[in-house]
Image 1 (cartoon, rainbow, N blue to C red):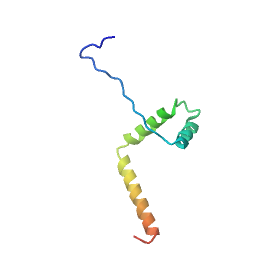
Image 2 (tube, rainbow, N blue to C red; image 1 turned 135 degrees about the vertical axis):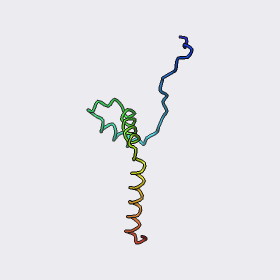
Image 3 (cartoon, one colour; image 1 turned 90 degrees about the horizontal axis):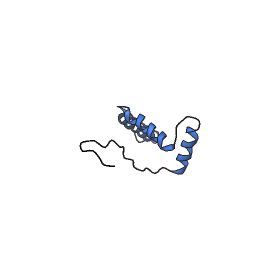
Image 4 (tube, rainbow, N blue to C red; image 1 turned 120 degrees about the vertical axis):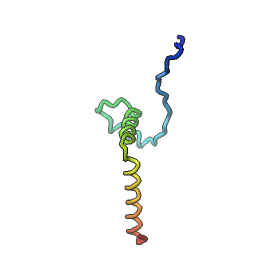
Length: 78
């Protein structure tokens, strides 16, 4: 099959991400009966939700900073 000149190739390319087996098993249990077809589709869905949130990075960084400060405070450092 020949490609037509000027026609764009709109195929999405995929990569591979490794996850620990216990996490994969947890995801399999979570998606049972949901209509989600695979662990990959669930992970893709969740990551898209997180990345679509405009303040997700900021919120996470703020929470992490508060957690660290709380832990240091409990240890008597702050």
